[in-house]
Image (cartoon, rainbow over all chains, first blue to last red):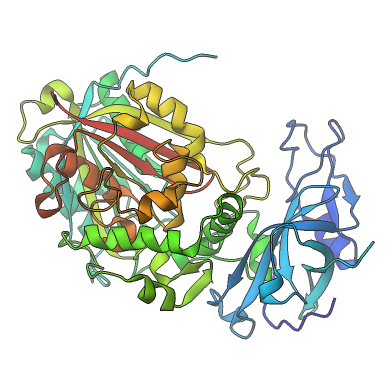
Length: 140
Length: 392
């Protein structure tokens, strides 16, 4: 993903999330999956929010296709790190095969952003830190 | 399981309210502000501090002072009930419910509840780093402030209902009309649609006027049994109904709505049934509403979630003028947090009490016997119905 973004702040990784970040660094978007009810969720948490079963750490790979559920265009930098990036777009995306996730949107014109727009997850990097982004989904 | 009506409802009243001035830079400690607001509430109720045996408050990310410090500052004698809640704007109505329960149970007889903060010159919630385990997924991508989270809900609400930026503007415009009569309000001048649309975006769909006015200040309320309140100075504002709800899969922290199913409905939709049945009233019985408005959109969410407007109709209701001064359902008669200032909704509760008591001065609604008050804009929140004692 070509993302000309300069700003970021380092994520504070914890024991519940370490494997998810490692997978993203390896180029894989994953979501936690429940070993009891089979459902997926995001963000990683110590137990399944659908059935309450303790997580065994299973992460399921997802192709990362989804549709925009909601979006905002940020005009004010709430952290100096993002001063060069504004305005930028954040999208909440319902993955076709899994839960709702959030990321930066790239390569879609402001006026073209709309609900249900098909998007494809990708990885972008700022100062070596891999982060979750989305771009327009190409035809299947 | 079906619940019966909570037994403290209809038995406890708010007997006094107090404020400090709301400013951009108080130059004072939070404890000083809290103590002044509490003394003012006691004076309003006509009770000496020596009668106070309960104190409670809420704070967000440590932005306030503990209740025992305030009891010390007031030179209150022994305190038999205390509560410091670690919450934000979803707290005020829930805090009042907790205090009412303490009074009704006999743990305390006279309880002060307060909210005090240097919310502008100190830590500003609107731009603060809200810690929490889900922050690691948001901050690195620049999804990193409270206004952005609420804006994301507002956008989905607009998608679902067809609401427009003109509907958000109408909320701000009506509240500016109310604020004209409130000497405490920061923003009292009228706002035209043109001026609204010309103001800068913070995060689309929100512009600067859609965001609460962060201020330094404090406010406080004195609660006691209805019987006792009847012997005090003010007409009692009776806590007639109350409810709190956190909807399912509310996430890991304030900024985490990844698991929340419907961004176009907030906690108000989830507590509506409990609230109206607890009050033994319906939305149609309400004279005025004081709705938590950290951002303009939350007024529309609450009007619809609580049944004061049909789904997708809150914008039209607001544009019609019905929620403005002299309208059929005045909403946020103090100008709301958008105009009066952001004391995290505790001032919303204070305004409800002033209206129900008939003490709101120039901005007093002609009829305010039954008032709805809400707290919170996202996954959890609380609400009260206050009634004027012995109202016809």
